[in-house]
Image 1 (cartoon, rainbow, N blue to C red):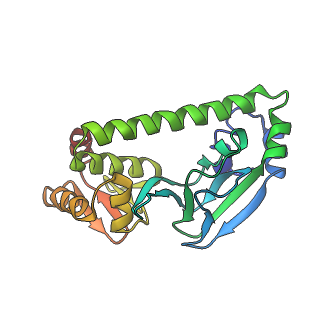
Image 2 (image 1 turned 90 degrees about the vertical axis):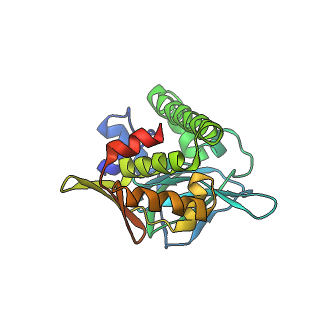
Image 3 (image 1 turned 90 degrees about the horizontal axis):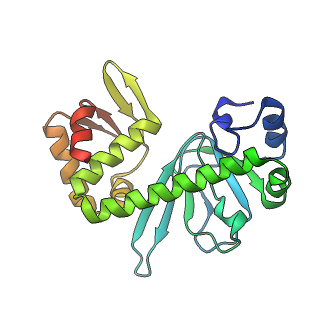
Length: 224
């Protein structure tokens, strides 16, 4: 059983035997970088767990503007809403890198929910966490300026994808400048200006589809 898979909320409260049995009910899905798993409006009856790589969840407005809702990596789960509310998919999911996923269909999940409250608890924890994140994002858009949102986004990416090296945090986020701007909910020009200011102050160092955080404390203070 993969340690990454055990990080997913669906598996958090299962013993080894139950976790192995649930893993056996899942189907592996592989995506190439840039490949779309499903689009906003598609019908959906599966949840997914990221095993390797990264995916992005986005929405498109009526005038064609794109908003990046989240970037998900190993151990994170998505798509569970369609299992309980069989409406269309609420976002488009695209592979940011070559990615491996495990998928669980509605019938298999419902079998596991019957008589297994620990699985239900894992899903409720996931839904509560998702709602909390959405509330935080709405509050940030109302109360935080763009540099503050950029700082918070960098710290979140560092928490999930960062690696400590020589007192710094190397964050290989794999996002383009445009995708970073979509994640923050601002124009690319405004986000690039904030990043350049952070770099000038010595808080970060910018690299290709990556950032090195040199002073996390300063970023945390700016993110408040």
